[in-house]
Each structure stands twice: as C-alpha cells, then as structure tokens.
Amino acid sequence: EVQLVESGGGLVQPGRSLRLSCAASGFTFDDYAMHWVRQAPGKGLEWVSGISWNSGSIGYADSVKGRFTISRDNAKNSLYLQMNSLRAEDTALYYCAKTGYSSSWYDYWGQGTLVTVSS
Amino acid sequence: DIQLTQSPSFLSASVGDRVTITCRASQGISSYLAWYQQKPGKAPKLLIYAASTLQSGVPSRFSGSGSGTEFTLTISSLQPEDFATYYCQQLNSYRATFGGGTKVEIK
Image (cartoon, rainbow over all chains, first blue to last red; front, side, top):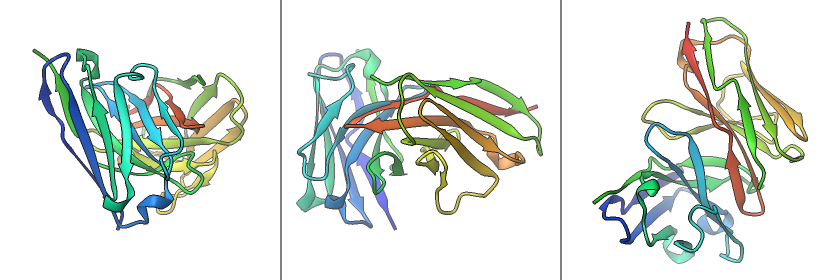
C-alpha cells in the first residue's frame, strides 16, 4: 500500500525557516517524480515544487522561487522542502504527492502538514 | 505559465443529475490533463488522467474528454457521495497548475 506521510509543519514567525519531510513507502520511490502542493485555508490547490526521480530536473512556482528548496534522498525514501524567508501568505496545508507513470498527474497524496506563518 | 480556467466555480445539483465541468487551458496541452475530487478535510483524489482515462477504482459514472485547450469532466448521475470540490490539473516540464476548482453542492 502506497503511503506518504508529511511532517515538519508548525507555527513559525515571518522571516524564519522550516523544513518539511515526506516519508514514502509501498512503492519504488526512486522510480517516480515527486511534488509538493499546498492549499491555503479555504482556498484551492496551488502547486509549489517538483523534482524528478534522480533530482536532475526541478521546478518551482514563482511565488516560492528563491526561498524554497526541494530535495530528495532516495536511500531514505524521503522528500523534503526547505522553506526560508517565510511569509504570511505561505500559510497552508502542504501535501506531498507522487506522480503517475508519465509524471503528468498525481496518483497518491499524503494527508498534509500544516504550516502557519504568524507573529 | 499555462493557466487553467474552470467553469462553473459553483454548481448546485440534485442526486441523479448529469453534471458537466469545463476546464480551459491557456495554451494547448495535448491530453496531459487530470481531474481530482476533494472532500472537506481530505487530500485530493485522482479521478481521471490523460484527459479521459479513469483511475482504477473510480466509478464509471465519472468520465473525461477533450484535448488541446478544452476539457470536460462529466458525472452521468450524481450520487450523494459526489458532492465535493473538483479540480483540473496539468503538469509539464516540472511546472504544474491547477484550475480554480468547482464546488458541487446539493440543490
């Protein structure tokens, strides 16, 4: 059974940093691209960042470029999101998502970890 | 960046109704479009990928069609468990976008 379990969320002050993790199991982790998607309270889904199976290709939303860094450790079956210079508008539930075989859609999602940026 | 525009943003319907949601892309995306269902407090669930392929385990009352810039999600006979928010999504070269969502509520 595929499982994606996010952790690392919490309450943080504006300008500070936070590192999210996503522990994957139930599939061959290094065969698939992985992404982070967020959802602000009461709002729609917003893509944040994605990384290829071997970390050779990476993309970021314009809203987080230069502040967030995605990475993965295939030996640990884990995905990460380092978030620096956090802003109030980064407040959201952050989901880890596994891509399907063509890397064009998300077939499994975690339950999310909540990040709240507030003083 | 490719923008996805969903319509309507809100839909009120009755059990048994046929429901259609549209997603328009700002440029051609071939058939690289997916549809998700999200219920309150839950993660999104993949319904349709590659514009028209039903994800395993998803009821056959859901169907998708389209290519290029215009896509539709159809629910042939709305069931009580289908009241939720639906999103379209495209992903290309490690950049993805979602539509704004369509909330389907009970009339």
